[in-house]
Length: 116
Length: 116
Image (cartoon, rainbow over the protein chains, first blue to last red):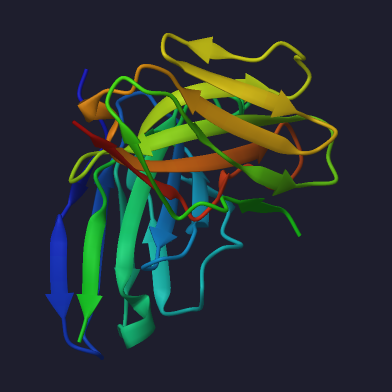
């Protein structure tokens, strides 16, 4: 079974540019999460999809961040325009059953974003 | 506010010895799940062990075991017979069993180095 995949693995952009991160969850997983880790700090929640619907987007920093999950499959996270403080590692995770929170969340390898 | 504290940013242990990583958390809820995740260098984060808060018995997975003290809100991870492959960042996390917040809440992580 293929795991969670993320693309790209690294992205270096200039302040003010746009970047789109992609996450492909494990097939059949209804839950999809985005998290972010800024250097030296906690991994912080950004948002949670159940299928194609945003269940919780309380962790999104501001309206420069836009997440979508077309058809309940893969998800994209767009940052426009990027700022220096957006640098960090963006993790995607998926899990199977929205009603069972104790289930393991499977993580992707992360996208390391550097904004110069 | 719900928080997770890992007070040891870095630790090292000799191969074959035992090491304990500490984790404390703060929540007003009584039902939740606790996790230890491991991220080896340049690799994906994977689940090490899970504990359900309503279970008094400490979880074990082979060489990994936890000491769960619910009243003290403490959830330490013990690694016995440490191996070189245990070198990784270890993240403590919890998730509430129900309610609007269905995401993992992480600590800052402990970087563990196993030395030959």
